[in-house]
Image 1 (cartoon, rainbow, N blue to C red):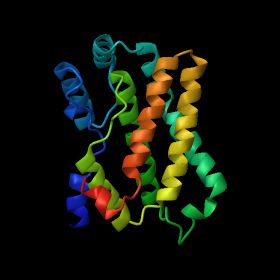
Image 2: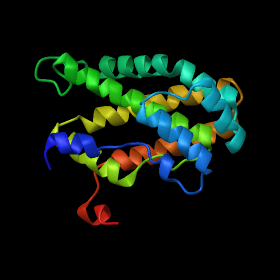
Image 3: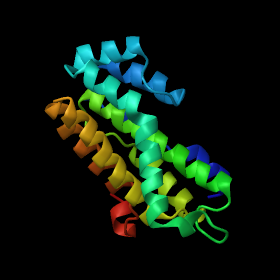
Length: 192
């Protein structure tokens, strides 16, 4: 499959296909995901009412998302500055920017999951295409895993500091789901 086809097939969010979620919730998530944006105030209120989650907790995650991405990026580049130097896996700058955008999208989908109280946030077929795309584009998966680990720590701190323990548990499991879906699998696992 060509890179352009893989890019079209790559999809992270699988929440709009979860039969365990009310149809109204799936529709709201699908609309936000199609626009590649966070939930707005009305959508957040509607989802949290249906799913019995904390609007405050989700609002905090959305409000802190840019700072979380920035801190995770700074921590990665402090540890592995060679990534953005000539010859590095995130060089030239547009390549690095695409990586940071992907991280923003991952966090957005995880926040959808926390709002929906759903830990299975990924789309299996879309993630297979994304893994293949990352392989073709030589995206540094270990660096991506490092950033995700930092994002998990930082978002957990946001929720714990505000006393939202239920949402913290969901957040942790949603990160597990995303990380597992991003990691390369053996051919036998792919067939499942």
